Amino acid sequence: MTLLPGQPIGETGKFTFFRLSDSSIVANSDSTTSKWDIAFRANTILINSGSSGPGSAGAFLLDGVYQSISEVPADSSFHIDQAPVYAIGKNWYTYDQAAFVFYPKPGKVLILRTSDQKYAKLEILSYYKNAPTTPNYRTDLARYYTFRYIIQQDGSKKF
Image 1: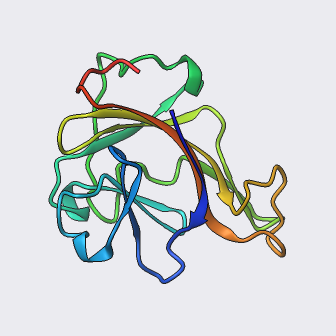
Image 2 (image 1 turned 90 degrees about the vertical axis):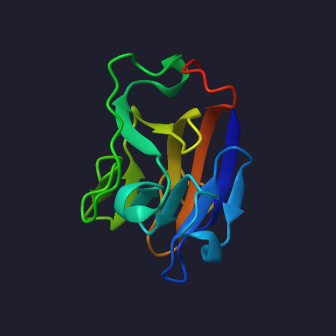
């Protein structure tokens, strides 16, 4: 399992592109290649497919507990990005209008298929720097995604 502590994401107005296989941020100059799997900007998540990139990645949100998800369900239907509708959409978070804060929804796990046919499960843990338990929009910097994931490098669907 890889746990990535929050890093500034999308502060320039551009997407931050990420490759799951080696936990690396991909240069914006490579955004039109298959070198990335998932991208973040503000609360929008892209998958390298369809209108978002040349890759053949796919994704969907699965309801469940991250630790309990041991394989990609057999009846899974992977979605591709078709702007303005994206494979992940907005169902991974809740926005508290009174507090002006985004919270990742518990029990929402992203299941991804990369362009090279590897499978991953990913859970977003926080949208704020240092992953505060109770974020405050005045003091906690936003767009610092903290997430954990597992990728199967052998192409199997078991985690």
